[in-house]
Length: 206
Image 1: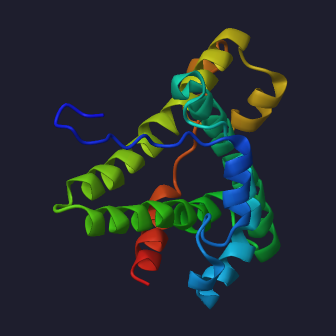
Image 2: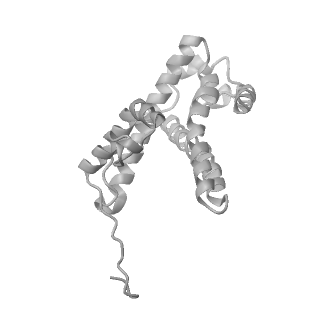
């Protein structure tokens, strides 16, 4: 009971079984009669993802750290799958990986953020959370999603040194090859960012 004489509402802690049952239900435990035809269609199209999300440990386990760790691992797994599928798609239609990344993958990963921002705007009195979500998500993608792997790659090549494959790849194509042919370096060739950004900007208009 609260200090004012009222009764505090205690939120029920979900179990694995409840999470799976909610994932199998069209509207997460609500009455089936209240679900629309579109709800049913979207349920069956996304039931695999719902069951995958239901495997994440309940939030009250280990103070939420189990949920965070497993969810982060699943995000990495799904990202790897999407990257491979996008690469295969680009190979089938004749697109380079860089073009596919800045079109198909970029739009596919940005749309959920857009929907989340729209929901945040509708639920709040202001757009602070929506703006924070859009800018924060893209900042993490650029600074952490690119920066951290590049940091690891730089440390790797700095410790391993150049291989014969490295020499064959950059001997005639990298202008700083002579400066790093003894020590080796992690190389990111530029040249496609401008075109890909233009294509992405055009697609966002639609």
